[in-house]
Image 1: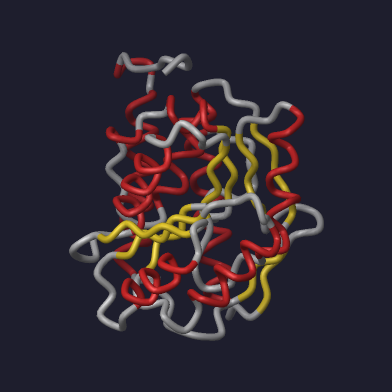
Image 2: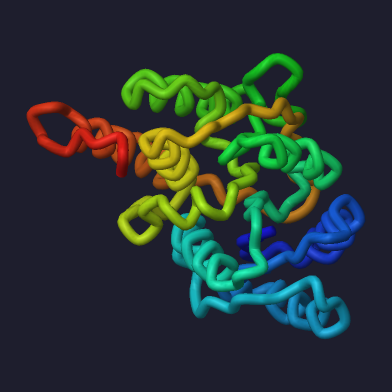
Length: 241
């Protein structure tokens, strides 16, 4: 489990308890970007008494993408890692869904995406404009990048180790939620077996959302850049990469 955090002190301990209850065999890595509210220190306290929890401290808030890239590299350096799950640290993703998310990897899938916009999925507690931004972002990315998946902006995913180790993490430039689109895009281009698992996404009840207008703008620009890079005349169309 890779959990990027920034000011999640109200959620962290309960979330880790719920994760380890749902998946007793799991290990969790908290990637804290120097949270001023003490989230990193709380994570250290929990890790001192719970051997299944580790903490990666980063000096400053740099965005979701860099935090995930650092966390993924940390867990991939551990040979005992078989699968990697990414999820939000605010209870928007239900830890009780973890066994369902991981199940496809046991029968041949390379990546399982927790999808809000498939039959059986949905969102709870979001205002209309958040739903519009989220669904509009997925539609925009699906259309330009020719991807068949119905939820490209969500961050609840389970990766087979070999796939995550093979995609170009160091080449990815996205800092915000565009990182979610970019990683799925790279997985698709490598011919990965990708499945969608319906989930219910719930708005956080504690802490503050990290969504900003800059994050939305970055996602739009990054999708355009990815599409440009795959145009035939640009000479970079290569599904094997």
